[in-house]
Image 1: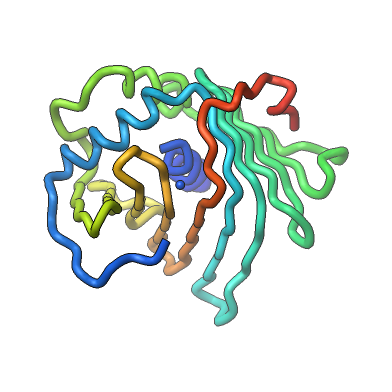
Image 2 (image 1 turned 30 degrees about the vertical axis):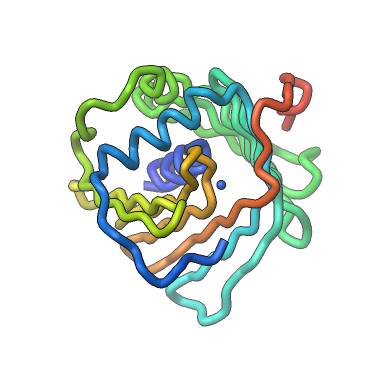
Length: 204
C-alpha cells in the first residue's frame, strides 16, 4: 500500500495562489489534456515546495519545506529541508530514500513495471482521447486554475488525489487524501521549466 501512496505522490508531482469563490464544472478530458500538453512540452523542471501532513491520529499539522526536480525521461528527485531532512530519488521504477544529509543507509523500493515513470510519460506524448480506466475523474475551473479530482475505483490506501494547475499545465497544488484519514498537501512555487538540468543535479 505504501508503494501505491508513493506512486500517487510522485505522479502527481510530475504532472505546480488563492482560488476565487466560484468554480464551474469542466470536462475531465479537457483538464487532462491541458495537464498532458504542459508536460509534453517540458524536458525538465524545478520547483520549491511546502508539504503539510495531517495525520488522523494527531491534531497538529507537520509542515516541511523542500525542492523537487524532474528530468525526462525518468528522473525525479525530492529533497526535504531540516528539521525533517530527507531525500527521495525515483529512477524509472526504482525509488531510493535516505534521511538527513543522504550519507546514511538508503531504503530501496522497486515499483511494478506498470508504475514506472518513463512508461507514464511515454503515454503523455500523445493527446488524451479517452479517460483512463480504473479511476473516476471530476474537474472544475476557477479563473485560470483547473482542479482535477482522481479517485481510484478499487479501494486502496489512497482515497482520492486532487491536482490544481494553471492553463499552461503548471501545477499549483496537490492534495492526497488517504482512507485512514491522513491528508498530505503540497504547494508549489518558483516553478521553472526547461532549465537544462543534468543527471548531476539528480544525485541522491
